[in-house]
Amino acid sequence: MTGTATPWAPWVMTPADMQKAWTDFARKWAAMPGVIEAAKNTRVGATPTETAFAIDKIRLLHYVTDCPQAFDTPLLVVFALINRPYILDLREGKSVVRHFIDAGFDTYNLDWGIPTHGDRHLGMRDYILRYMDGMVDHLREKTGQDQVNLLGYCMGGSMGAMYTALFPEKIKNLILLAAPVDWTNRDHLLARFTDPDYFDVDRLIDVHGNAPADMLQWSFTLLKPVSNLVEKYFNFYEHMDDPKYLENFFAMETWLNDNIPVAGAMFREFVKYCMQENRLIQGRLEIGGRRVDLQRIQCPVLNLMAEQDHLVPCGLSAPLNDVVSSTDKKAVRFPAGHIGMAVGSKANRELWPEAARWLSERTDPSARKNA
Amino acid sequence: MAQKMAPGATGAAGTMGGGAFPGSQAAHDATMKAMRKTFFDAWAQQCEEFMRSEAFLQAMKQSMDSALAFREQLNKFMGQAMKDSPLPTREDTDAILQSLHAFQERVLDRIDALADRVSRLEAASDANTGPAKGKSRTGKGGNR
Image (tube, rainbow over all chains, first blue to last red; front, side, top):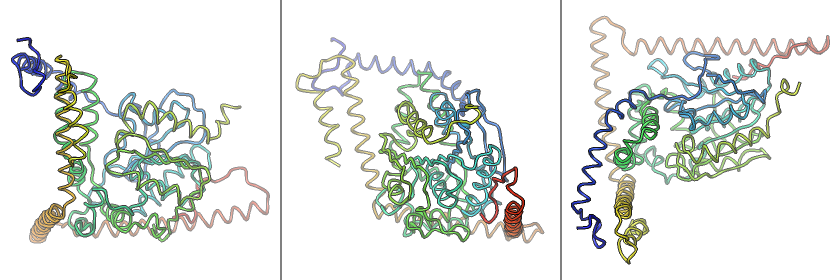
């Protein structure tokens, strides 16, 4: 008995394998107090923020740092209405906003708040024409700049594109991250789930008021059931004695399970008009009586897409570059998943420094710095 | 699916046989991991195919319809109970909120119209007396 597996059947456990498995198990079991401690001490949000402005429940968060400001034009980050926006600043070393802060941008994040039943009537008109525009106007007033830079992630990217089309004069540069704009291709799983033949969004909102957080969570989990419900926990077991892994794991789990409902009218309009009827790319979407024409976007556009995105496949984002009038536009397909684009090590190492450089090259240096 | 499984399976088999398997514990673990990955990939593929099937989508629709029907009944029952005991129902609060929302919209529209008017008056005044020192950046007028 050499204690090694037999070459012809590696799945047959030798006594040595069994001993190793038990030793591993004992080591994992011994790591349990550390796991509990890591879960209790989970911290999310790497950079301190302060509320710069608020309209109703919507807050404009300002990242407070000691980094010298190299540009007067601020950067406004807009996240989706689903889940919370701190994913873009999850932890040290896994922070999208940190790259822009380090590059010298005065950075803000739009926190949409948590809608309650009373917010069920809030629709696109409220979110884009009232809240988003109010925040942008406040930023312009506060910084004394005519324009702001906008970075939109996922649904926040779609909303950012809509906003830029409605108010092109207020946006200096537009960065979109995994932002769906064209739902022509109905082949991906989320499109099947939201197909009008199988999903009656009107009835859902009529009955529930808002789109329930639990339902959204389960819908996203079901898109990758094996990965989300099985494989993840195998990986967790294998790494549960690694403190660094635990910190990242619990930070991600905190965000993944921090689900919030989506205001009923907004969810209804987005699913029906955008996902089911595909009005946005066709120029048929109207918000508050104003037509959203993506051709009106003239500012520089950086369209970042995730090659392995199961929520927003590249085909949903790429057509934006074909319809905008911008002469300075760039599309990047990065080998990552939907969330990996924001928190992945490779994205933080390669993609975001490049994106920050792209924005720096298109933003005038601070007058105060030059003075 | 067989095609999707093929690379992982052949990879695992290649590690197992052909003299490539060195007999070390690390190689054994790598083989087991490769087999596990192949199994999970195949399972994930199977799940995706199932969830794309008409049967699954119909089942999902039916279960959602049932859940919504149950919730509707619950809402009706709770609403009736509230009405019977003189308490405000969800419809009552909804009506108030809708009324407030409409009121807010009207006020904001009016403020925007007034801001637009002030901007135009300022522009006309500037044209007569020269450029103003400050420049409004709110751009609120007529934007809503």
